[in-house]
View 1 (cartoon, rainbow, N blue to C red):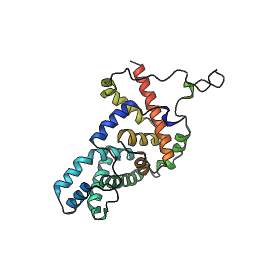
View 2: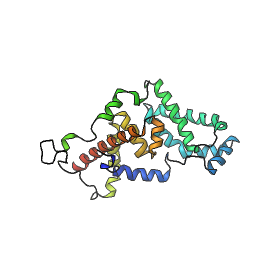
View 3: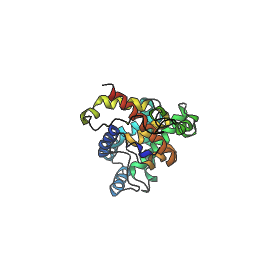
View 4: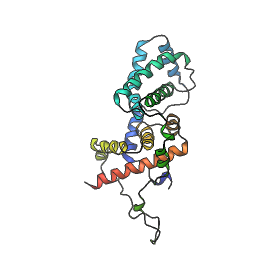
Length: 240
């Protein structure tokens, strides 16, 4: 089934749009003039420039670190370690990527290293569960007619349209909580991909780079994750 069978999960899409307006991982491929000015200020020891950088990115860095490590406390340590790495590595910044991209690459490398020390000794893409995630059906087979039906492979009943659901309810805190709960129950690969793509606003290229997976595998994992979260939301809306 093609990825386009389902559009992006609507509540996640709206939340992601809001987050991208406020700042996400998505960024241009080379450093901007503002990036270069900021780097020069940091190199000269401008404390206010560093405080501004921390205020812009610290919360997002913490959320990203928590994808890789098992607790918020460890994630905080990873972020602090990353800031030290940024300060010590400023002289090596050449502007071939955006400053934000450079910072987040340092973060993910340190988070992966810390995850290995905490017991995740190999990247998730090499785990047996990862292969299972790629092979499992995106949608429960019982939702489609079987081979003996007049219309084999067709929907038993079409997924419910959410157009009639008020936007206030879709964007409510309770719905956001249900979305996060559904994401938390996903297999690790699917959880990491959907978090990067639909929560943090990464492009597919950025997600592949951060997680060390191919574009094809990233697309499959994202599709399966979105389908499962959408199904969880269908059940939630149907119960009320």
